[in-house]
Image (cartoon, rainbow over all chains, first blue to last red; front, top):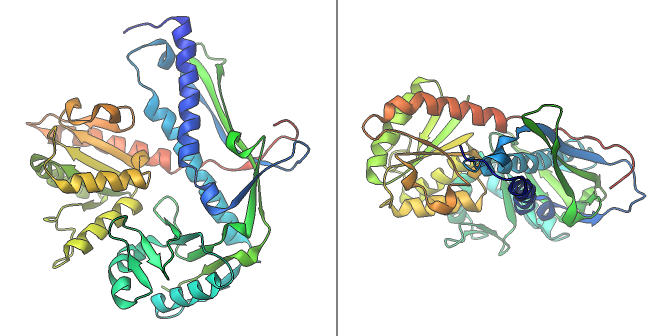
Length: 234
Length: 154
């Protein structure tokens, strides 16, 4: 075991805080899905996403311990939770139009894509992972309106390249969601670029510190017309 | 059921990955081995179909286990797979299962969760890996819940 100095310990704590923030800001998908704004200081009724954990003090006192993976995990979990929360609100909003599936999924997808994009630019699509191979292999063959960019691996629909978000075992859903970011607002305090607060402070346990990370936000669906859910029968 | 996708780098790693696939299946996990020789690949699938299926499984699964045996893996697929994993930010659900620390690029050591196996008896490390798979899965399965923020302050 190698011991660090007190200065070294403070520096490592600062590095851990910076790493958690950096990982969160690099990974957060919010700004790709919805318009964001800085909330005024007087605004109220905010929600918060975050956690408080005991972490071992020796992460910062010993030089042979690398805590990076654990710190990154906290940030990644927060990012995933943000997206899950946003989706749960979208699926729970009765004002959002849900279009019934057609027997031909490709035909229904293209029809809805076209009609929606004639009114609003589609900036993101949430898509069910079970159609991933079909959409990348079969659809470009079946329709000239869907192409696969072989260099980037991304799908092109009607010559547009919306950002796709795929369902997975941790964030399951079976519908398509067409998104124009103007459907809502994600307001944060004190401002969007500094919306995550992180602290590492002494705890009531001798060998532990308290890690607290928190983002305060207000999510409003301001224009449900700018988002559309395409359900599926399967 | 926990779903695990197994990738591998370097020819000897494929043997370890194949043994690991059997072990995890026996433990009742749903497993996909990302190999052109894998029983998990549909018969007659084209190269493109295989590659898209690997992408799908990496995105969908609960945990990716990447088996490394050589310091310089000889599969060009490794580069493509790792690029895909990085692009889609899947490192948080990836565990590197490697012969030694030297298999892992220096700059990735702080990013990748890793476990080592003895090259002559990798099977002896399978149960430890299984525990780590479940530990990691439990961490990822517990999203943070939104709660009302206390009034006032930034």
